[in-house]
Image (cartoon, rainbow, N blue to C red; front, side):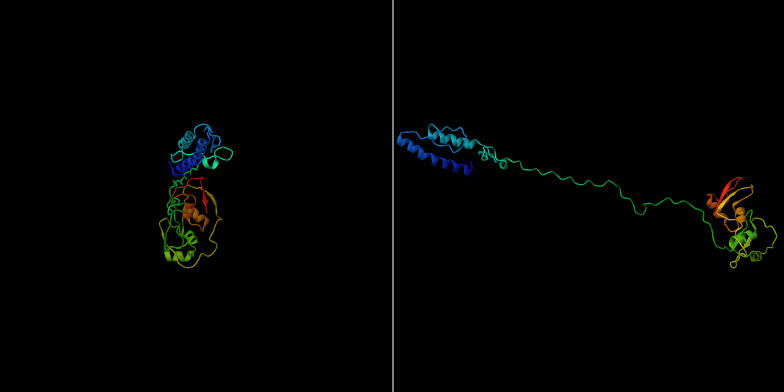
Length: 234
C-alpha cells in the first residue's frame, strides 16, 4: 500500500470517528455522508463497518504499478481522457537498402571494340615497285613528282612499257607538271575487265592511292575483282 492511500484511510477514520461519538452520546444514529459520489457504500448502519468497507474498496482498485487505486474520473463521471490515453508507440524507421547496381570501371566505360583498318601510306617513298596495271607516269601523278626526273633517277626511258616488279626511284622534290586528276571523284566504278586491279583503277583516276580504294570497299588491296562489280572511289 502506498503512502497516499494509507494517509487517505487515516483521514477517513478521523472524519467518521466524531460522528460515531456523537451518535453514542445522543442515542440517535447519524447518517454519514459518503465522500464518493455514486458508490455502493450504505449510509446507514455501523460507522465502523462503513469505514472498513470504504478502505477495502480503495485497496481493491488496481493501479498502473500493481497497487490498488481509484480510476480518475472527469467532472461528468466518465474516465478522464488524459488519464486513460494510450502512449504513442514509435515506429521503426526503415533503413535505406544498399544499392545493388554494380560499379563499372571508368577505364573501360564506353570503350568500343577496335576494328582493324588498313593503313594508307601517304607522302613520298624513296623507292616504289610497279604492280600489275601500273606504269611510271601513273606513279609520278600519284606522288606528285616530275615524271622525267623519276625516269632519269630510275635509269628508265620514256615510251617503254615496264613490267610489274620494276623498281622506281622517287624524287623527293619537284611536282607533277599539269593536272594530276584524270577523272572526278568520289564516285563509283564498274569493273569491265577481268585483269583490272585496285592498282590499275587508281591509275585511271590519276591522283588517288589504290590502298584508299580498297579501304573504301572493305577489301584487301590484293583482292580479285570480277567483271560487273561496282567499287567505290573515295
